[in-house]
Image 1 (cartoon, one colour):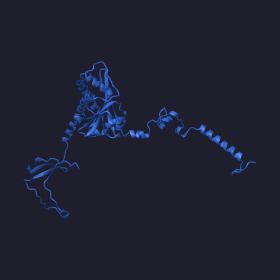
Image 2: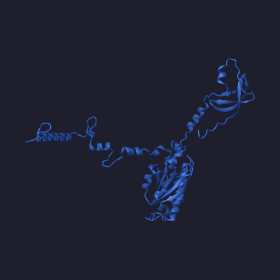
Image 3: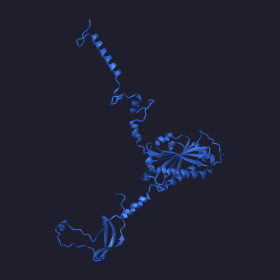
Image 4: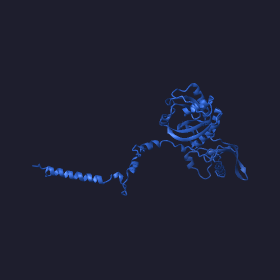
Length: 362
C-alpha cells in the first residue's frame, strides 16, 4: 500500500509528476537560446560574436581584457611627440656619414620603427648575447640605454680588424666578449652618441656620455620596470654584414624637453612659424595702451578721506624737479620728468625701468 505524501498524493504519483516537470524544463532549456546570445531586436548571436564580446580570440585563448586595456593605456604613444620622428630621422642621416668614416665601408642605415614599451618588458625581450650601453644625458640628468646585437658586434669587429668584403662575419657563440671586442664596440657607441647629441641640438642642446657597457640585462636597470620609454630600432647594413642597434630613452629622461617635442615639425624651423611671429609682432605694435603718470603718492586715513570736500588740499612730497613714475596698469615702465608743452602738462621719458624677476618660490 502506497504511503500518502504531504500533499495527499501517493509517493509513486508524486515521483511521476516530478519527472514530467523535469522533462518539461529540459525541453525549454534546449529550445531557448541563452540570454547573452539574444540581441534587443531578437537576433541570435553566433559563437564568434559571443567570443568577441567576452574578449576571447578564435583559438579560445584570452585576448585583451578591459583591465589590460586600462593598463596599456598608461603608455604614452610616441606619436604624441612628433618632433621625435624628426630627431631620429636626423640621427639616421648623421650616422650614415659617421659610420662610413669609422668603418671605411659602405654603410646603409634604416629606421625600422619607433614605439613605446615598458622598460621591464623590453629588458626581458633583449636577445642575448648583446652589449648594453648605459649612457647619461648630462643636461637632463637622466639615463638611456643602447643595445647592440651580436650580429652587429661581430660585423663591426670584423670590419675594423680588416675582414674581407663579401664574407659574413664569423660568430663564436657561447663565450663572453673579449676586451678587444668591447673596446671596438665602445668606439662605435661613442660615435652614435655624438650623432644623437647632434640630432637633438637644433631642438635642445644635450650631451650624451657613455657610462658603462654591460652584457647582463639585470645590471642595465636605469629606471623602474613599469616606466614607459621610447624604443628606436635601427638596422645597419654593411655589404653582406648587418645588425641592429636599439636605443631606449625613458619618458622621464625626455620630460625636460617634453614641451619642445610636442611641437609640430615645420621644415627646418622646428616648430617655429616666422610668418605668424611677424604678424603677431606687427599687430602688437599697433595695440593701444593706457599710460598713467603718477605725480605722487601718499597714505591717508579713511577718516580724512571721508572728510574731503571740493577744494581740499592734498600735500604730496613730489617736487617739480623730481622724476615721476609712468605705469601701464600695475607695471612700472618709465621714469619721466614733468613739464609743460603748448599749454599742456607733458612728460619727458628719462629712463626705462627693468621688470623685476619673479622669485622661483612663487
